[in-house]
Image 1: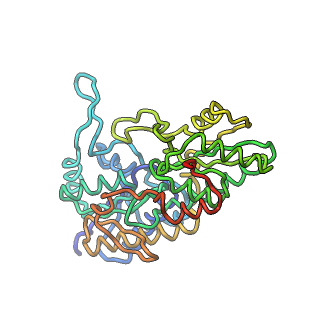
Image 2 (image 1 turned 90 degrees about the horizontal axis):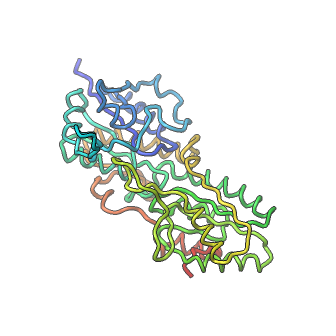
Image 3 (image 1 turned 120 degrees about the horizontal axis):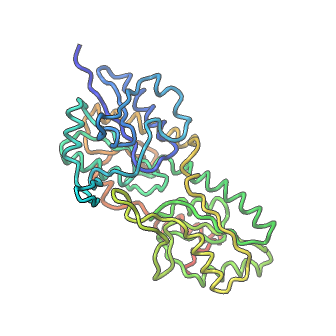
Amino acid sequence: MDKLKKILVCTGGGDCPGLNAVIRGIVKRASAAEGYEVWGSYEAFKGIMDDPPRLVKLDAAAVAGIHVRGGTIIKTTNKGNPMAFPVVDDSGQTRVENRVPWLVQRIKDLGFHALINIGGDGSQAISQALHEAGLPVIGVPKTIDNDLSSTDFTFGFQTAVQTASDSFDRLVTTASSHHRVMIMEVMGRDAGWIALYTAISGGAEVCLIPEIPYRVESVIARIQERYREGRGFANVVVAEGAHPQGGSVTATEGELGRHSVRLGGVAYTLADSLRRGGLEADIRETVLGHTQRGGSPIAFDRVLASVFGVRAFELVLAQKWGEMVVYKNNAFDSVALTEVLSSPNNVNPSGTLVEAARGLGISFGDE
């Protein structure tokens, strides 16, 4: 019998509803092909970089029923980027170094035929670097931010929107009861997709996104108009990367080996700006944070992630290295990682969704 070809699977970056469904899709499709076995690396590349490596065989028993579960059974991390790996030198100082060539050799030495890397823009940048260094790699698009280009949706996004919309609906009733202005902050980094979808689904008065810098005066004017109309309350959705015209994002310094800045807290910054701008209203802030990443994926994401897993393994069979599976125009396909990484998928300020939102009376604070 020929030696089995070992496929390594990694889930990197922030966790996301649907990761387990992808893993299950890969394993179930691999079981229908002769000569393959699937292994997972714990905590993305950290598991295979550790000594000894922390790996787990992913067979039918390991993935049974996991498609309905949130999180990832092989865990994840957004630290330890092999392209800029934190290393403490003899003097005690921390620096970063490129561990990609070493990692490629480690994966090959452990007998792996190919890598399926499940992740967002940062993870797929690592995929491309590994591919350029000679490792057969297939990418799978994962992020609640929906900011990867070449695919209409990334799995996890729709579940995050559903979570945000459910929370927004609850804030509407309490805002109405207390005649308050409720500001709800959602994730998304540099893309406003979660905020935009939530604002439309929930009927927000104001939606602030990174792609459309806002004026505090315009936000105040829209809220005051709402009160003058006799409604007595207002609800605002703000993306974590939103910022005023001429201003900067609300963030703290990041850590070595991950994003350069850590976004979060714009809801409080906005509330303070509204108060200082003269808005006489009772304002409350809610930051959803990691609730958007947790819990079971909704049906849409289970289907999307499951098919992504199947198609990813089929790309392995076809040896389409350096490509990522995508969902485009109601069809599943694949594109080169270089195309995916050429530009982010941000909200088009003049696009259909923004124009529709304006038509619904939603203000983006840029008037």
